[in-house]
Image (tube, rainbow, N blue to C red; front, side, top):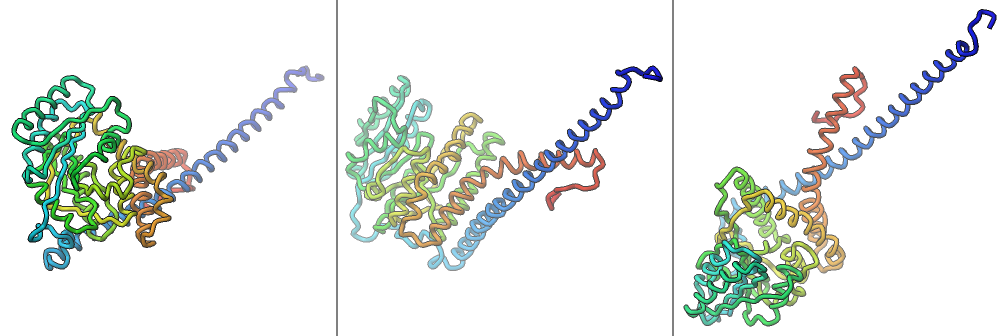
Length: 402
C-alpha cells in the first residue's frame, strides 16, 4: 500500500502460484492415468499373447497331424488311412437299410426345385428310399415351386412328401425334431437347399454304418461359386482350412469333430440316444454331435465323398452365417460344459474339448482376431508415437516384436 500497489496487485502472485499448483496437479493426475492405461495395455497384451500361443499350438497340432496321416496313408494305406478303420463297402449278404433324405428349407425359391431334383436322382433301391421336404417357407411362390417339383417326382414313382408347420419354432432344428419320431428309415441324409449331392452319395456313405458304433458320416464340402469373386475365393480358403485340415486331423486322431449341418447321414438310433434335435443353441448340428460323442458314438469323415454347395456371395449373408458360427459354439459350451466334465471320456479328451476345441478354436481365435490385431496393436502403436513425439526416453512398454 505504501508503494501504491493496492490489494488486487498483492493477490496476483497468489493466483499465479495457485495456477501453477493446479497445472502440476493436473499433470500428475494425467501421468497417473497414463501409467494405469499403459499397465492395462500390458496386461491385455500379455493375455492376448498367451492365448495367441494357444491358438498357434492348436493350429500346428492340426496341421502336423494332417501332414503325418496323409504321408503315412500314402506309404501304408491299409494301416494309416483313417476311413479304412470302417467298412467302406457292402459286406456280402448285407441287408440294405431304409434311408430318408431330409431337405429343410425356408423361402429359398431359386434353389428349392434344384435340390429336390438332385435328391430324387440319388441312386438307391427305390423301395428303401424316400424324400422328405421340410418346407417352413412363408412365401407363396416358394411353396408353389416345391409343390410342383414334388408332383413331378411323385408321378415318376419317388416316395416324396412336403411337411409344413404353422409356426417356425426352433427353426431348422425344430422342424427336424417334430418329424423325427414318425421317420421309418434307419438312416437320415440331410441336405440344405443350396447343396447338390452326387448321385452315388448314399451308396458311398451308408456302408460305413455296418459298424454299429458309427453315428454319422460326413461328406466333404466343395464349392460351386468359389471363382465368382475374390470374396468367395477368400471364403473357400477359410472353409477348406476347416474342412480339409481341422476336421480331417480330428477324425484321424480320434478327437471330437462335429456334423456340419448338411452333406451327411445320421443313424436314427444315434439321434434318439443323444436326445434328439435341440434348438437351445444356434448350432443344433454341433450340439447333437457333442451329445452323441459323449454317449460313445463314433463319427466318420470321408474325403472322397464330395458334396458341392454354394458360398454366400454377398456380405450380408456371410455376416449372418459367421455370427451363427461364432455365437453358437459359445452357447453350446455354456450349456454342455458340465456334461463334458461329468462324462466318461478320458481326461485328455475332456481337456481337448474344453481347452482347445471350445476355448481356443471357438472363442480365442475369434476374440484375438479382433481385440489383439484390431484394437490392442493400434493402441500400442498410438502410445509409442505419442511418446516419441514428446521425446520421452523411457518407452514404458513395447512388445518384443515392435
